Image 1 (cartoon, rainbow, N blue to C red):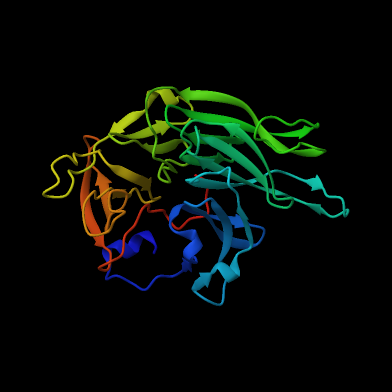
Image 2 (image 1 turned 30 degrees about the vertical axis):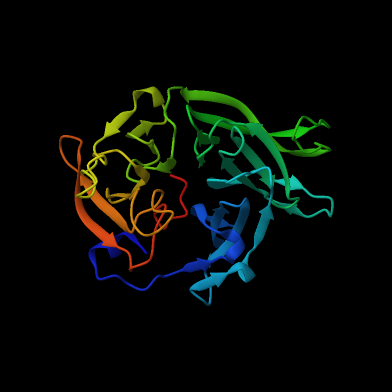
Length: 314
């Protein structure tokens, strides 16, 4: 749905993707442009990664039969976020010139990692990253932001031309791409859950969630982050104070905050990680966020994260 739909009667979905049983559950998704197509980037808890078409399309509902690119890899245990990065011109062996796209995956896994996939060759370069939960490309600074257990860092995408093999890594033969120098922009016990743009900031701020707090982070001075105060949680769940248990948070270009808060109870066995509603709010003059709408999902439906239907990185 689009943001304005929150204030109207529940519309029919404008697009859906349904995975098979092997997908189990979706940990993350976002929308991007690849060539002339609008696509969705999907990661599943069993290690599945996929790019599927969104529009233009002659059908609103797509399935695994429509997947453009996919990889199922054991090393990305329980991946949580993905990003699509344009990596510039590259001459492929068949002589065609193209702009390769890189598929970046953040996964908590065994200690956590960031993986860089060349979707043309389907090979990956990996680096340790504790508790990887979020990745976001910054097209202005040409850096990749990554959120983990205790850090919000940014990386420079770089090209390599060497052969090396380390523990748990693929053999780097010829040319490829990896993550260069890391800037540890915030190094505190965050235990990050989600990393999203603030679309109302014109590319200057990020939004991150943790188990107990929500932050608005300026890219130029990440250490000067600001805590956001969301409305209190559901009645009957006293432990869910304002900014606790928020699984995902994003801000639309019109200034609306959209979030999902962990429900932690209910008939769904996964309810500790999900909710059956999506909340929308506006910032007040004192910096707090007042809830203005709640979109209840149909009975039996649950959501893990909410995103703005936008292909913009920021």
